[in-house]
Image (cartoon, rainbow, N blue to C red; front, side, top):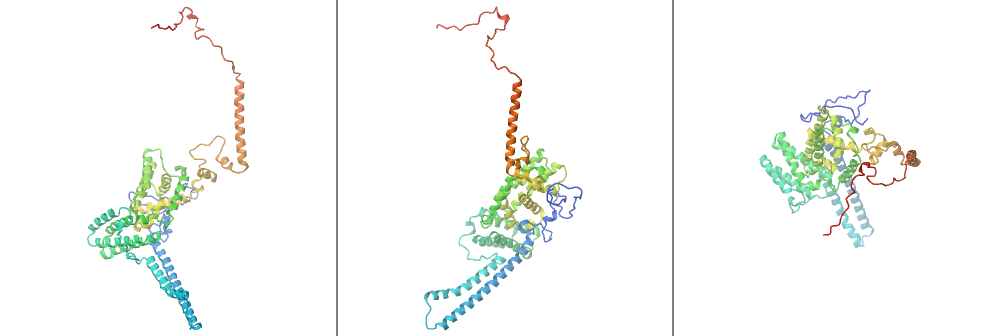
Length: 501
């Protein structure tokens, strides 16, 4: 029995109904269903707000995660301020005590040059620490989103090492011309934000993500309150803002050096390669690959999940995840000849990911999580399919023998590539004996049994040959027509003649 809860939820991607509410359990106590099932309620935010959660956000949606994270960071800032003030008071008290002692103990003597130099440097340490913590507070709370903390460099943002900045800027300006009044203000804010972030080369991945998400939130609130646009129109504007910002900051935002995304990419890629032997039957995916239409849909799904890495905008990457998922639903529908369900979708998605082994999978997941418009991940088709993709990756990372209804010996043999479900075993050798032959005296016993079996087969063949009593003498040669009695009256054979020229 595979881990999970056996709930079946109707899922119709074309109509946009995913059956998140009204979950009904269809597993009885007498009959156990074999397959990969995930409670649809587990895909939602742990706080119960009704939006989709994400493992990268600790099971929360982006809004709840920001609230929880903001409280923790605010508490840390307060502790840092308290520590800074205490250190400042202690340093001032120490400095005042040392100065008073020096004046009373030796008022006639002048301090030496090293002492004078050290005393002159002590008061400078206090404002430096104070400045550091004040800057940290502003950066952490996101209060200086649109204002750079340092003087702006002389080079423009188009000279930064980013991909297609000029084209992205032109497209963004052309779009903002249709917005009319707020267009100039929107471009000014976006350009200033990208300029300030691009200058901060040492900004960590999480800090950069928080700054971008703060900017999204502030700009969205401003569009709702100041310009009072419709929700649909504001979402279109925010999509273009996301495209412009992520294209400008792509080199800095995707797989940054401050994060371990590359290490996770190599780990999941190695894991998927080791699981190349997993079949549709092991995952209980309702697929019939022998049907050409099903095979064609699976190929399209694999292509789409691989093509996700070629895009640079989070919305475009999510679009390929959605396309891949719709091809999966099409393959399931053609296989079952009925509407697919959520319980059928997840194991098939796992199978597609195993067959595709997408490049830089974890980097793409983290990039979407950090810099995509949060409203797109919290609801709708894109959010639902992306959440299922995260669940599929988590399942692959924790896949074991029990998940596939295999014995530990079989699972280890398949993982070590010593056996395969599609490769037949040699006669007289089982998986259990092969797995036990790798350790201790059992290995010698299996090897001796194989040698004895070969010697016995050779002796049996020799006994059969001896019982046939074959005559090994060679037959005498004769003329080719010696047995032809009727050929006595025939003329002699022609002899070659030499031509005299």
